Image (tube, rainbow, N blue to C red; front, side, top):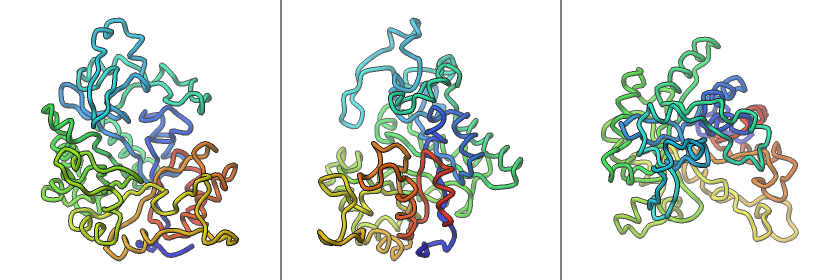
Length: 338
């Protein structure tokens, strides 16, 4: 394995928990992820009407909860513009925590993960505090530090409606003893300005997420012309290093896919994978590189690794990455030390 920035095995970040085995963003998914060897559990954070941070991939919750079956909430269905996209459904910011606790989670992609349907209707929406409590209790139980890797979802939007995520996030982390650059926490965001602001208020590690297309929503709102591609350049990474300690990158930014869906290779007759310089450039800027998202299902895999998710892990670990986001932390963990 190529040596990474830390000189240690890459960390395994359980993407929304062990979401290949349990409905995502539930305590059951996080608990199983820990049992399967995850180093960090990852909650996407949105806000309730009363300002409590909860774990949902989106603030629109019709795909991940049974809210549509609750007649008492039918009148709250609405349409909103979230980060420039029109969405119709039920939104967390229109419910108190007590109301949301009446709902139950369901599998978001049942057509791919039919085994998870068995848990539909059984699991609550967890709060950030409940996730921290789980991480701390399991850390003590197994004598291994379990970190948390929260993402602030739609920070510009939530700030615009008076429910900014950053203040309650820092308050909760501080109240639970998470302080300093070595705390088992990474705070991530696809936006830039909120991370820059956080860097002036905390010394906890921050992670700039980089997609393989588009631009941060706060750039859209402010009229900034730069894109994620600009941020992923050597000069862009040096700018990120002024406020963050890591980048969380889409896999295709490191090893692009060709038009057929295969990983790009050097020359038509050559079998060698052709990665970009992103890992080298990020490490040169002093940034860790965490890559997302690894899943076992063929529809998510490059064409030349379908049926072989292990091979995909081996490839990316060989490129010196410092961590991976995975829906299957057991598969990721096995190959992180190979």
